[in-house]
Image: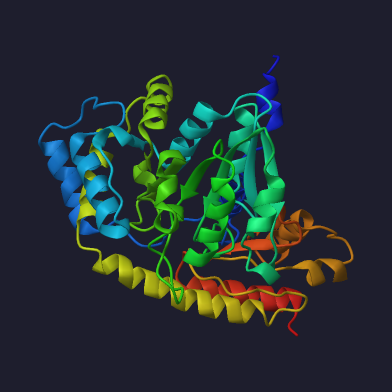
Amino acid sequence: MNLSNRVHTIKESPTIAVTDKARRLREAGHNVIGLGAGEPDFDTADFVLQAAKAAMDAGHTRYTAVDGTPEIKEAIIAKMKRDHDLDYRPSQIVVSSGGKNSLYNLVQCIVDTGDEAIVPAPYWVSYTDIVLLAGGAPVVVETDAASGFRMTPEQLESAITPRTRLLILNSPSNPTGACYRRSELEGLAEVLRRHPGVVVATDDMYEKIMWDDEPFSNLLNAAPDLMDRTVVLNGVSKAYAMTGWRIGYAAAPDPLSAAMRKIQSQCTSNPCSVSQAAAAAAISGDHAYVEERSRIFHERHDYVNRRLNELAGVHCVPGRGAFYAFPDFGGAIAAHRNANDDIAYAEWLLETARVAVVPGSAFGAPGFMRLSFATGMENLEAALDRLAETMGTK
């Protein structure tokens, strides 16, 4: 069978591949600790479950509008006003089957063959492949630990060409936990004002999992004048522990929201009706439990960061949000006799220590590893003990 060229231009999601391999080892009887998946270990809140049950009992099990019910759109509009003082109309909100679906819709709308999309690295694994699926060219801007894994205005200016159509920003970051400060976003906005043809996607999926010394800001908080070409992407998976409910959303200027709605109408159509009811309740409801969970993630972060920095050949800078550590394993890899890159080293850790991590190459950062601490302290302690026993300490 001859497969399309586009299938050969992309790779399977590395995080899903690592999680699946860890699952297969468990099924074969091995005691594997998986730190690969970015999925909170908390349960969906009871009041959200009750909202889903009420929707089912009321017969809300049929098709909805392609871009979401009036109820969830109202909840998102109120949230954008409450959290960011941003005003949107229902026509500007597109609710999709997960955050990945929202980004896919956007890229399909604005990227043609040969167009460029700027992606700061380390990046979420799907950014570059979604651009490739549209026939575009990802332009990767490398950041490092010294810069706090944040792109500078000078780097952005250098990356923009006449073919640039999109910039993707993610803060707090998956995989680094880095957060852009408002002053840094203002600096990026100064560059963007000189390039009016560049659309910006701000991926705010982890905005409520943050412990920086400055409140969360996205690009529109820093530069509201860019609202006519900025798309805010978000969802309920991470903050509300609703990964399986598959609800993401985009807030976009009308021409883009209309185009995204058209794309969605020909692929997934509407997101799950019951999930929309649950998501509307989560977005509108009491957020005290979300803040408490963020505090727990912060505690886990501090523990994992300390333990990683005790490992031989490993250096890990602290994050300020999300639920990942992104340590540099370069020294450990260089000292290993056989595993000479991060992919081989991750395989060795899985086979030897029975700990599953994701190689940094998947995020555009060879030599690093991503470890998720969206799991209980008992698992984290056991995993770090195994790594220390296998790798040695400083």
